[in-house]
Length: 226
Image 1: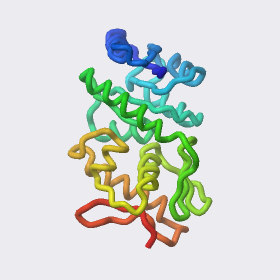
Image 2: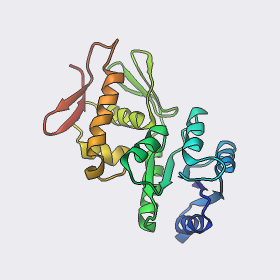
Image 3: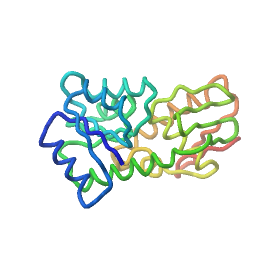
């Protein structure tokens, strides 16, 4: 597994490299120390995961991430940030981050999040999946309803893909968080509801007549017809 670390703090980059390459883990780490060089490395090299610091010289992490996603690059990205406000976290996720980790962090948590992201990306290798007139392409991370492409953020895509894989099964907020965020429910419970509303407007809004995303009172949500 090849991992690109875009981090300007040499000490932090060294800690990450040693943590991931320890004990014959199978990870090979490449380090880039600014946003411009990191973006070039990410777009010209082949990596299984990018660990991206938000505060970078020459080009900030959000800009690097946005340019990556705009170019069609769907490689999993773990964003490092010293900011813990919900708005900052949402901004990173909406720009295309798959997960985030606050500085300072524990080595064990870093390793766990890396394993989870690589494991999750392995689920996205396969043919188009679908339910009713909703289709999801796990390779290019796009979704359609009745042949109309849906404009989704990275987080919305992960959620709709999770719903499709679990169609006609009630999923709780905790299920959604565990499979789409890797973050405790206490912090993200309100954000799950916000993103469900985003999805409903795109998946069940005009011009679509049939509603697919339903609330199951006191339990969670379900993707089903009718």
